[in-house]
Image (cartoon, rainbow, N blue to C red):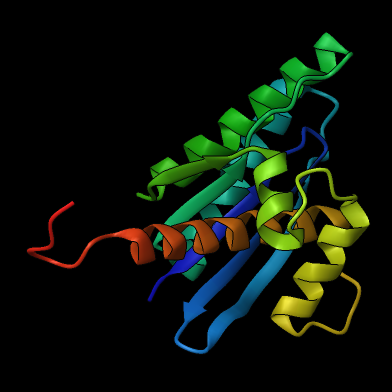
Length: 168
């Protein structure tokens, strides 16, 4: 089995979480947030890149899953989020990880069973499925949700594959 680094990108706070896909279910490895300290936007992007790269090198996950950008009413915010997302992806790629992308709706559907679920429902399911009693930071919880969505998607695709030699 493998470990997945999930990322919830943000220009001020990027959440991350690593989950090991163990034989008895998902196991929490680590989680946290990368808080950017600079008012200079390009410097914040570098901090995101460096932070994701450092986490990937330290914990050595095999895969990288990230939430896709959702459409926002504020174009400037959407552009900044997209750039933060790009910095995080580059950090993962530089660490040699394959990248998988998921829409927020897909993450909610995988965890809660409803694509329009509330953020609090996703956070509750992340804690429940990982057996975590403490309250997780929202960004880290979202990142763990993305990682769990990837594991669930991978397992579903594997189950749907036909055995060797089978005909369609």
